[in-house]
Each structure stands twice: as structure tokens, then as C-alpha cells.
Image (tube, rainbow, N blue to C red; front, side, top):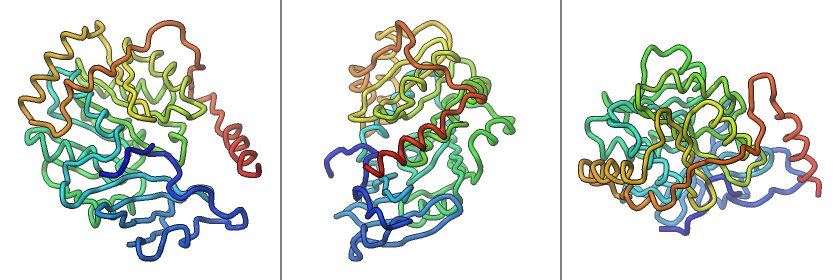
Length: 304
């Protein structure tokens, strides 16, 4: 297994300042499997030793999106994808799961392989990402795994279905698309959760909106637990009384016994940290979008 690296870390460093778009030269020719230009991304599929990687080119940088071991489809090389599965310890059942943001489909495929009774729906904005996930990353849709090419928020607003678990892992470079990070978005998520359900959100801990993301989740849900995932943070949000360590441990052990997960959830609970105390971030709303400010900061940093 390669060393654990941040999912949003640069895959090949900064590209030359004179290059307007990601350059193929930054991905060695003998490692590049396929490059695709979609409406939303420049996508690179690469061979990294025994692994297959997916990278997105954004603003002259390359970001690692997924890493897949064809010899062991249940392997989750990135730590945050392992900790996304900690959400299984929260609802009383996990028969219906929605994931917003597919990438190489590692978390969804892992759950699909382990949990034979669960019905999983993955919503991904970019149809080319869905195509490449099926071609190179072992993602095989069937009657238990559905892939939908659509904006995640629009899908949630319009679907009549509700879910035991909703996972949000959609990024554009270092930023979560803003409409998937606001109070209004999480209110929709909350309405689409079944009673006792839980939401898991992958958050880049060094991102400028980290504190605001936590504050926004806390403004909508009664409880938010944080899991340090070696660079990223997985936030798990839910309503109702706060769950005790004993309750989560009992449920995690039951889940582990039922599904024999490669990455046991009981061991993850030691990293749980309830988000309590004073809220330091500003709650993000649909009418407060500091996106242009963030882009200005990014452009400034690129010139340094």
C-alpha cells in the first residue's frame, strides 16, 4: 500500500506558470493510461505501481481523486474513505445509502461489496467520471448499486426517496462546490434522511472554509462528531440525543460482525471527537458565498 496522502494534496505539484491548462508532461507517459476533457474537468487516469489513480486538473494543478488496487477491490488506500464508513455505527440500519460525489467510487464500491442487503445510489455531476470509474476502477452498477449523472443537490430536492445514510464527498480542487456546503443544502439532506439517519461529510481540514463547514453542520443537526482521517476530517451529523461511546461501540461491533468489514469500525471510534463548545466559523447560506474571495486568494498565492 502506498503511504497515506491527503486526497486533496497536489498530485504533481504546481505546473509551470506559463501553462494555461494541466500539462500531460506532468503525468509521465509510461504511467498515463487515459486523459479526458469533460465539461467539468480534465481527468487523468494513471498507473501508480500496482494501483490505478484518478486525478483532476484544476487551475494548473493536479489533485488526486481516487486510488484503486485491482488485485484487492476492498482496499481503501486513502484514510478518509475508511473513516467515511464510520457512519455505519450511527443509524439502527443501513439498508439505503446515498453518496454525492463518485470519483473512482472507492467508498461506494467497498460498501457494495461488503453489504449485500444495502441499496446504494451514487450521484456524480460529471458523466465522464462515471464512465471512467466503470472502465478502470471496478465499479459495476447492478440492482443494488445505481449511478446517476446529475447535480447532487438537484437530485436530493427532486427524489422521493429517503435514506438511512447520506455521504457527501464532492470536490472541485480544494473546495467543496459551495451549493453543497450551505445551511439550505444540509436542510435538504436532513429532510431526506430516514428517522435516526446520519450524514457523513468529507472536509479538507486545511481549507479556508473548514470552520464554517463545521458551524453550518451544527446549525442544522443536533449533533456533529469529527473523525481525524490523516489530513482530512470526516464529520458525521445526526439528530436526536447525542450517542454515547457505549452505544456507538455496540452498534459498530454489530455492524462488524454482520459484514466483516476490511476496516473495522470499532477501532475508528477512538478518533471520535464531538464538535461542542463555541462555534467559531460563520454559518454558510445560499446568499453568502465567499467563492470569489477564495478564488482571489488562490490567484494571489499562485503568483508568489
